[in-house]
Image (cartoon, rainbow, N blue to C red; front, top):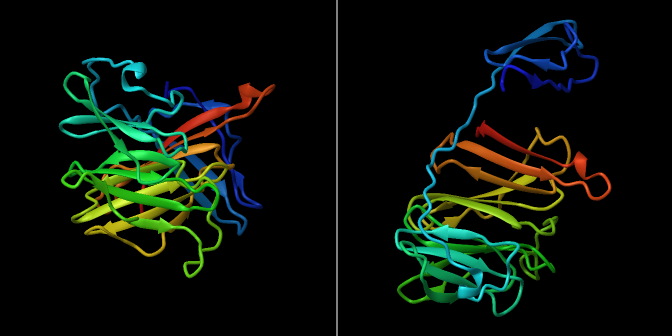
Length: 272
């Protein structure tokens, strides 16, 4: 209900609102907020709330039991799909980890695809239907990104190798970087973007790929609207076009006995 939203504001030092901020306000039209700045000048701000509705329609087609796929990991099931298949990640950090391949039309099991390494955290299909996967940083192995070749039934060498080792030193790679990651665009031709986040952080790491070649170092962006480190967050661009909208979905989880203080958020903003 945009006519009755709670209001919060954070101001710079020695700044104040012209009038007290109400507990709730009507945002059905732009809300005017006038702030007196430290230098004595006044700044007028207009806050607009834009509702973002789902851009897809959901229709049930089939269901497949995890036991039919010999699924090992039940709590984290990441999916991807192309025109023919649905891919189900089954990964717990072991050499037996794999991707289960299901027929998109009826959900029938087709085959398993072995993963290129352990601790694969996410799988993706790019705009051209190419299957990809990424490894998250644990035990110092770094964030890594791979592309699958259907013709040879094999994975590429590491397309992104964000790890620190002799002759390839990188400082400050956060643990669990890539525990959540996203992909938009075409990883082999044109432009694609890979974005990775870590646990207990509020920065996201972006790699731009041009014709399959990533930038040497990621662009690291601290997400200012996150007032505190998120527990988990997904960050994804809407598309690979310049100025694309960026979506941020975060969760701050508070453990027992204060679970009621946990919260989630979903933001959309423009890249610059």
